[in-house]
Each structure stands twice: as structure tokens, then as C-alpha cells.
Image (cartoon, rainbow, N blue to C red; front, side, top):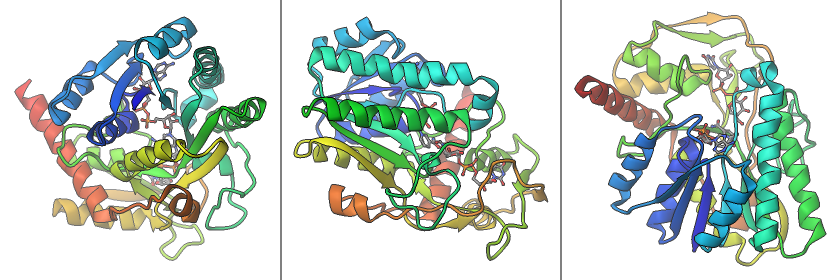
Length: 338
Ligand code: NAD
Ligand code: WQD
């Protein structure tokens, strides 16, 4: 199958590109390089031993998308492209609505005009807002607590309306929980520019010595050790979930929302301890105040992914931490050579 990945050079897109290529698909990548680099393209080619078709461009450029859909005879699209930092979305909401919502509209227009109706969308557990019960299943009420989350919610709702308008549409919204980890080759992983906002990349920078210590945002949550709990999922498991979703759309019409998580919650202290075990040294950290907007506990009900997609996360926390450390060291040794 010919599959277009928008945002295909980003963290999750690049891992999915590897998985889909290994499964025998032809993967075509579109990215505006706003949060990625051409270096990733070279690494993808080195990793798979295959050349990738890559177009540098913006998902809001509808004529470009239409041309790509036709030129590459695209069968399915996985839409990763977008902005994803919650804090930044509060400062720059218009940019978020433009990139994410306008980007999705542009893609839908191009797909509709080209008669390409299979779409997998990168959604997020953020659409559940403050959990009313746990684990979070797909019928849990949805809400948004920040502009980033609102873009995901708007897009999901838009996709549901679009699928009702024409029975040809086959759309899966994958609601990711907390993606972490890196490809075992050490060639691709999460490499945010500047100071990371998310836990795992921050821990990795502390471990490498680039940052002095980890601030643990609150140890007074109503959890066993007082720190907040999340459902961390290995990015390679997540990538495989996209392969399963694409196969699912061969036989399913309409709109579907499916969680991709492990179903297991882990605390921040547990993450620190597991990372310490992976690197064989202690990680400097201190407890600070809670971060505004954080929920205490969040983890997925994963039954739907299993029954509908036949997919289940396989990799454990040790593998998530050790792969991040391996990738981090690869980056450091590469920087030293450069
Ligand atoms: P990422 O920033 O690494 O990847 C996104 C890619 O899209 C980048 O390469 C960026 O350059 C590109 N891009 C952004 N705007 C674009 C545009 N207008 N046109 C073309 N390319 C554009 O992020 P990621 O972690 O790989 O996330 C991928 C998707 O998954 C995003 O939609 C994100 O909201 C969603 N998601 C991520 C997480 C997470 O924690 N990483 C969790 C839930 C959902
Ligand atoms: C995890 C835990 C922090 C950093 C975010 C988005 C969500 C989704 C995934 C896209 C929390 C704690 C963190 C640090 C810490 N993204 N922490 N010190 O907030 O669960 O989810 O990414 O859709 O929408 O909100 O992930 O990695 O930022 O935090 O103590 O330096 O680690 O308080 O409990 P989060 P995270």
C-alpha cells in the first residue's frame, strides 16, 4: 500500500515510517521541518536500507497535498503533522488552530478531491480532559483544558462529521497516552530543541549532564508515592498500532476512536528509579510545586485496541528507559564527532 505520512520526520512519524516500511508498504513523507530535520530522513534510509520519497512542505498547502496524493497514488494517509506543546498553545493559540485545525481541513479537502478516504489521525488522551473515572475508555466524556487539546477535539469532531457525510470515509482517531522511548538502533528518537517540557526527554538530558537536575512536579498527589501517574507507551509499540489501524481500515468504514496505551500507570518516582536502573547511576532530582493543569492519574483502557485492531503494547518500562538512554548516547557521540 502507498501511505502518506504528514509530519513523517517527527518523533512518532519517523518510527511509524520504519514500521510501515518493514511491513512492506511504500511510505511517502511530507514535513515542513518546523520541528524536525533532514538528518532524520538520512537515518530512516540508513535504518531501512530503502530510499524514501520526501517532500518538504506544509500540510496547509492543499494543492501540494492533492498533487502528492495523485503523483504517489496514495491509498491511505496518517496525519501526524501539527504542533503539540501544551504550554506554547496557551501563548500562541492562533498558531495552534492554524497548524492543527486548518492543517486537517486542508488535508481533508485534498483527500476528498482526490478520492482518498482512508485516514489515521494522531489524537491524544488529552481529549478526555480531567478523568471522571479510570481507566479511560473511549466513551469517557471528552473536553479540552488548553488550546492544544481543543485542536485535537475539534479535529476529531470534524472527522466524525466528515465520515457521516460520505460512507466512503474510513477514519481512525488514535488517542495516544504518553509516548516515550526510541528505536533500538539508537538512530531515531525524541530530540526536542531547547529545554524539554516532557518528563522522559528531560530525564535523558539530566542523565547526560546537559541539565543539572530533574524537577519533580509535586509529591502530594493522592497516589501511593505522591507523584503523578501516567500511561507511558513505547514509541515502537505505538508505531505498530498505526500499522494495525491501517489494516483495520481495509474492512471498516466510518469513524473510530481507539486508545493506544499500555493500560498500566507509572508514577514519576517509578520512572526515575527505572531510568536510574537503566543507566546504572543516580539521577539528580528534587521535588517542586505541582505543574498547573496536571492531573493526578491518567491511564488507558486498552480492550478496544485489542479487540478491534488486534494490537497490544509489548514493551515494558525498562525497555522504554534503556532505549532512550541508548538514543541519547548516540546523539552525544555523534555531536562529539561533528
Ligand atoms: P513532532 O513535533 O516530533 O512531529 C510532528 C512533525 O510535524 C514535525 O516533524 C513537524 O516538523 C511537522 N509539522 C508540524 N506542523 C506542520 C505543518 N503545518 N505541515 C507539515 N509538517 C508539519 O511530534 P510527535 O510527538 O511526533 O507528534 C506527532 C503527532 O502526534 C502530533 O499531531 C501530536 O499532537 C500527536 N501526539 C503526540 C503526543 C506526544 O506526546 N508526542 C501525544 C499525543 C498526540
Ligand atoms: C508526565 C508526568 C508531570 C516534566 C503531555 C501532554 C499530553 C500528551 C502527552 C500530546 C507529569 C511530570 C514532567 C518534568 C515532572 N501530548 N513531570 N517533571 O503532561 O502527562 O502529557 O504529553 O498530546 O497532551 O499534556 O506528559 O511528560 O509532560 O509529564 O515531574 O520536568 O511527569 O507533572 O506528571 P503529560 P509529561
